Image (cartoon, rainbow, N blue to C red; front, side, top):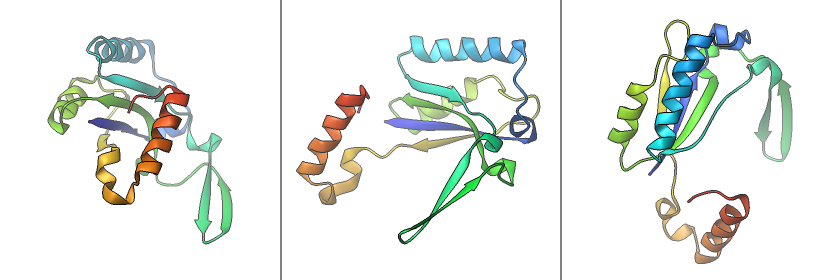
Length: 141
């Protein structure tokens, strides 16, 4: 099972403040643990929303809105992608994470859809195309 672990943004991350050496060291150790355990697939911090954009879809119309975006609590400051046996194992890994922010932090855990989750609508042809794309980008299913 793959899980996307989402670190919620706050006013500090949205201001573009970088973590101090103590936090960077603790996070590096944690990431090393994830890698050594063979569960980490990816993980990165994100620039503040002021450097981003949103594309809103309405039928065939596309509207681009440049950041920053309101409500920092709804934004993402970073992520990990992990592969573990259960949601409970994902929770245990997240509970071991050092606090990545200066004050309070919130980390959300979301399971990633797998091919079998889509049922018959995900035809054999679509499955083959998905597998080809994953191999091409070097991703692990």
